[in-house]
Length: 412
Image: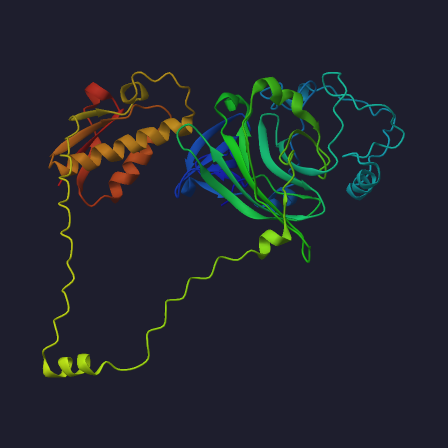
């Protein structure tokens, strides 16, 4: 299972796109492109492309007024109320991808215009779009749906590019997500997905780029680019993207092109180590006689430094008998808007830490207050408890006090 796969929930009929791999057993899925939820891998199945063809499942057709980034949640269920449009005059034929690339190569434009069109292409807001970039390496955020954007790398140069892709967040300085080689005039599949509703908490993306040409006569320095997103500049960056021929939020990664390494710098070698002076050839007769007679002084014994005493480990503190996993109990002073995925990860980390300390301090039992909610946290806690050999049993705790929002764990 990879980022970008379309999956179906085994516990229902909903389908979505895998937007992140949270850990070895948990993935984030965008359901109907409206919201994201964490789901266990064993609770989803990948939908093959052939299934859509065999069952005649076409792409989603958004109704009047629905444009990427706007009205994403407009009703798509009641299609009977949609106005039936009568066929109008035939539109001019759109150029093929090959024709578009040929036009871009000859004129420097990123996208060839349709036959018979003139003047700038109008955007959805009525303003003329910026001209597409002709050459370079670009980060393109391409609409996969009205609310979901795919992070794509575009190589609009004549050289191959070795690249790495990672993300930075306030909770994690860097996380590597992808590495590969991208050929000339090509683009990657979506490396990750970003949801417009989470714009304020988007991570900064980090690319490392190394241009290379087979049989080329120059080597290049590594180019590192960190791109953060601000609302003041993000929405004005939408324009036609080169190579892929789609509108995208476009950011150039090589405003400063990678510098070629001078041949004389490549020819420099590390200084050779200074050879030790050769020992004189010959045998010291007096020293040899002393060794044979046993009168030679004994070789000094190597002195081994005494190991420093290890610092005593901090004592383990037992958790409270009733451990509350609600966000307001774990972080009472928290003012940061966290996604559902981040909240679930925080709660599971707190649960694992409390259970470990309870076992280490020989507690007999502990109650975890997880609440009802969607049931995802309760289900994940029960799954982990069922695999732990140090647990005697667990059950719903005091329904009169907690309802079904707490679990009693009896420890061995």
